[in-house]
Image (cartoon, rainbow, N blue to C red; front, top):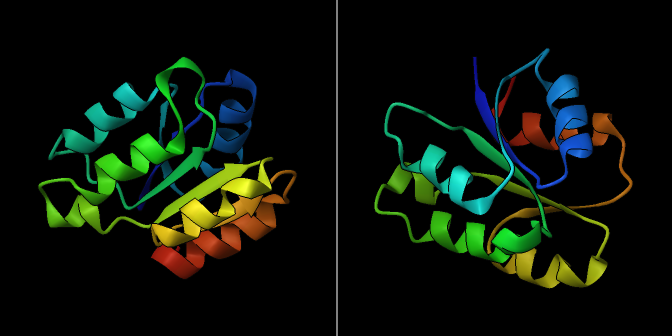
Amino acid sequence: MKRILIVDDDEGPLSALQDALEVYYDITAAQTIQSAQSVLDERDQAIDLVISDYHLGKSGTANDLVNHIRTHQFLKVRNLPIIIISADKDQKWFVESQNCNFMLKPFKIIQLLEIIREKIGE
């Protein structure tokens, strides 16, 4: 089963995404950039895709997480598909410049599933 890392500092959206996607994928959740980085740095935690909210509270923004992923020492991690979710459409330029997908809130889960399937399959 494919593994997805979901990163969101807000427990409500994190739980909602986790509940919606765990039917199809193995989900790992993180509420801070630091905990997401720890998951990504573990070699035995093979993550296939990352979904992250753009604004991650005091721990930073998705920019920080994407930079960590894109400069990671392991090629598999550096090339991970990333989906950034935000209500702030002004962040779309950064997200797309980093070879990430961008979803504007609010969105439908079916739209998210279509992007996930396009990136990693079922």
